[in-house]
Image (cartoon, rainbow over all chains, first blue to last red; front, side):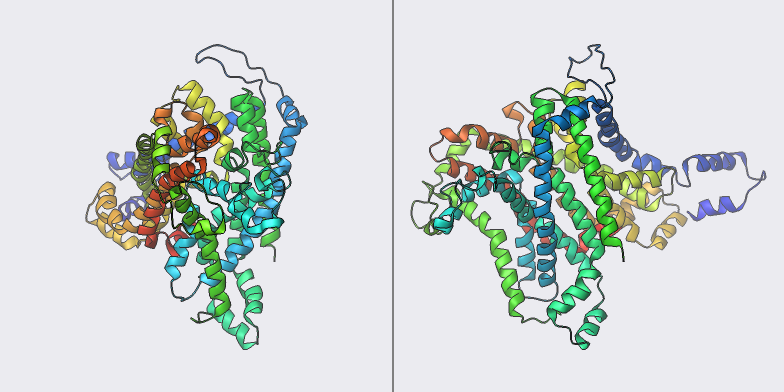
Length: 315
Length: 276
């Protein structure tokens, strides 16, 4: 780098030709062109499996697209918003979007409150802290498929949860009850992801100044009061992040409706947009309608993220 | 704030730990029971402990084969992530080149666009156009370089003092040599953290390998277990026992890794990656 500064500071035709050429290279590729070489594999990767598919999804959603044999010449005419109309007029699609809204209404507040409370409790010197921390993120690091298996067992008709509840057990049981299937999924995902969000809040709590707590306690604030007026505002940026990430997790919902409620049952009460995308796009061979659902979902997530930033970051 | 004795806090933490750990305990217990006992007393098994369920799931789902597939899938992702992720992280943190800003922006964008939304175009490309269905490459490709890991590498390289690099450059070391002999040894903790994070992605992933592999010989354990749950379980003698045995085999490696390396998965390690 000092080398680079030196050359930049000596402009003019006195420089030997080789240096002049390297300077021209620098203005085209930047001061350390090697960086392009080192970053290239990652850049190509992002372009190939992220940027291009994202564009392709939008393109497919505006065309009459179907699966054809590789290399076959087929025409895929532009159809405007037809796929969007087909998607939105389908009751199954509308149901899946309502389901994900129900999911978010339960999951997001629960996630924010529980992870902040547990992170606050975990913050500071307590015995067994590292054991507790590990205990909290064990569900997060385990495969959904594996933990879904236990929940199936726990929440099945004659499972342990119903045995515990005795006469209070819901009928029909949790996972086959159209009013309860989605809430169970929302709570399952809260439980599974909580450890990660606790870690985020633990990181944020390190940035809340100790003096604020001292000032609060001098002013006679109790534990709850200082939690509400020092901790909660202090971790607000982290809360924005947690809400956005929890929303994205909710938008991605697939494994739980597929396995926990046996394909979004009962009667579509727990389908999710991604599950409907899978059914329409791959099982029924309409990738165009499925892509339209995907685009609507992305727009929804972006809108929620923006609203959330506005609400949580205003002072 | 950091007093050691405060009962409400300890009660909250202990209840939390029980809620988080009990399902795992119950998973192991259920996998060892000859017949499912869902009563409260059944959570403390005294009799009838058996390994039959493991044998039963192994009959339907070739556990060794599935674990090997999970391992190849995950290993491939880890290899690509560590090799190309370190290079990209180093370039993003310490080298000035054209396009650095855009690449960094793209990397952040990847984190907010849900992956599942790309499944249709990725399926069209990888399965239909490139014919990579039922192949390890088809499974690995969309996950090959974990962006969170690249981000962590960048943050760690960024935190190293600039003098170190300037001194090496004055001594005439090439950039690659600086990365190899100065940068890498100093970011070794990041290497572990990023590897752990990159590990759970493919090991636990269900939807993508489920779409790409129809051949049971190539399916990772998450996929073959899910297929067992949704198709075959009804016909088994003790379906829950067999399912839970499979679940234990699937969850154990990830849990063991994170317990063993828990020091590298703390808020401070991640925090440096999360805070921009």
